[in-house]
Length: 248
Image (tube, rainbow, N blue to C red; front, side, top):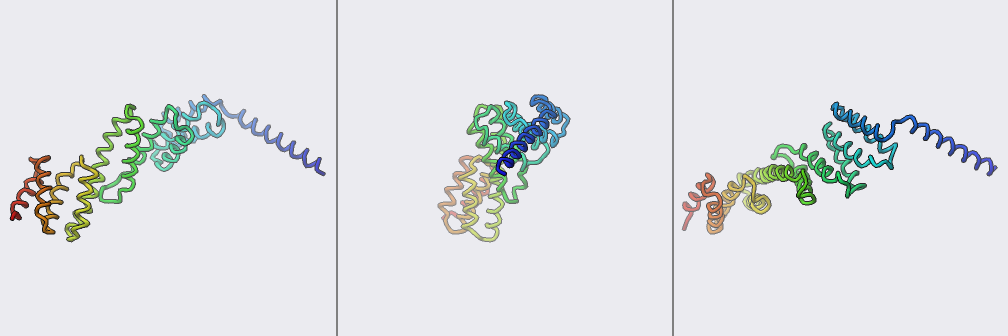
């Protein structure tokens, strides 16, 4: 009985091997399959392109073309606006090939996929934070790469989004006389986003809150900081008038 079972197992394994071999014989070789995926990409058939690159990896897992196919799959998903699939594909590629020559591109693709999902600054900015961190990683890891310049420009935009979100909440708190909460938001802009376009307004709002809670000397300190850095700003003109009006 045992001999019969052993023979059956060997025959089954042999049949599976033959089936697998026949299946692969029906497929084009790796380079041809990669070229097919690239041709689909060039025709803007992005999802079919991603499928072709993924098929190459499944059928020829030891091919030297697999790492490039993985990145191309991620890029095809990105072009198809399948951003979750893009990020998953990039994460998998980087896990398997952290030192690959296409790693800088992969990091950049992931950052772009997050950036495309950034919405109005009045909404939750979790995705904006993630995009900011992703572009920061591109700049930190590959400062001299072809992707670093655009990453730095995107960081400027994202900084203004994040600072704008803090300002929006701070103004709401200020309007509702929640002075400590509003002050914390405005100070966050100063501390975390000192190059943001909303910084002059943040300094004015800090001045206003300190005046409101009866700390004119603290208010004057931030008004001076505003005047030193933005002397021609409308925000400084308002801060100057406010501080002088409440001077002892």
